[in-house]
Length: 154
Image (cartoon, rainbow, N blue to C red; front, top):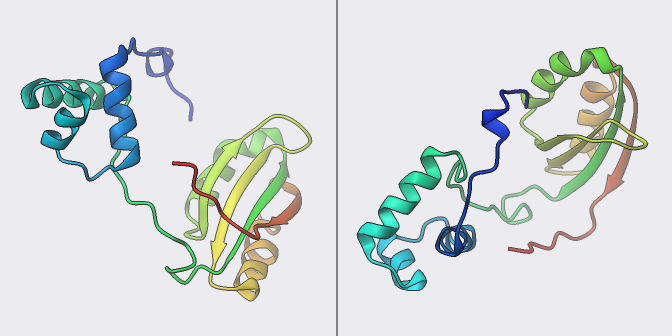
């Protein structure tokens, strides 16, 4: 989360870079040959561009999107936290260690942190919230927003 200015400096991207990023966002398993075909460039050019985008940190990882319901994670919630500001660095490491926490964001507004929590059922969700999150030093308050339906926009 914290880093040097160079780590957070935008990388200049052209239309070819943006097209490559769009293709790999749509399907991270797409072969370099397929990316090249879809973007209308040579395979060597696509390979060079993907390597540069990866090396410069624009592409940070290639991953699979998992359908949480099919994976047995039938209960999801966004959990907001109000925290003691000086406890954030320690708290984020504790949050990262909880497997059910799928996303962590430090935000501004009525709360300080928002988490996406996915569990097998509401009993497990309750355990995560009451036994783990609310008992962490530095957590002042939580609010839970149940997810009724997930829509993937990609």
